[in-house]
Image 1 (spheres, rainbow, N blue to C red):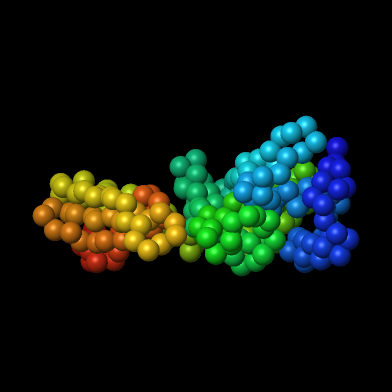
Image 2 (cartoon, helix red, strand yellow):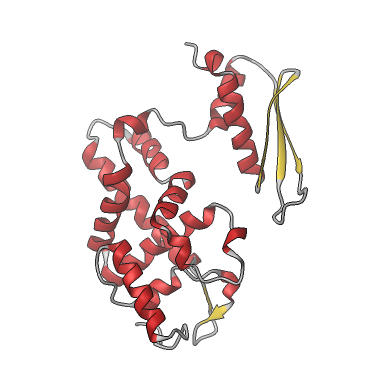
Length: 245
């Protein structure tokens, strides 16, 4: 069942521009345009459907995440017959990592279509990956599995997935650094604190200490990002020691 035609109060020209933009990105014509508009509707727009339910891209993002994981899993299952469950899971995690999805969303210019009351310059990087997943959810509902698989093949797998290269890609520098510290029996500590400064968004700063020394510092809009950023800097500072057999 489609959304009412006046749900988004769009003008015909705006509909036409959006339709052409979607057709360019998708490689095919969308049937239910309102479904795709919902994939770019930020919760700050504060819109509701006829039954009073909140409308934004988050439910489509949930569905798109599941579809992306399924299709990538199927691809890896076919392409790497020798890979065991652990290997396949690890490779899938690399392909659908938040960092990678954000890059995909940026490359497609998806943020240009986002409807929000918040200035786009105030969004964090994750908005790019979020709407990319929501777009996949919309494709699935609009056209079904086959079209969803075709889009993921053309926009994710063919241009970006190289099995040999992915095998050497680090998923989490934090995990790598912690594993090394534990093997070397070196104490480590992530000292995280709020550091808003003059930024509009809340920031967190982190000092990563190994033994008695602070080996890296970083700032980011979340504790997790700050820790990962500091860990990456620590990894490259200690790379000769960490990579040593």
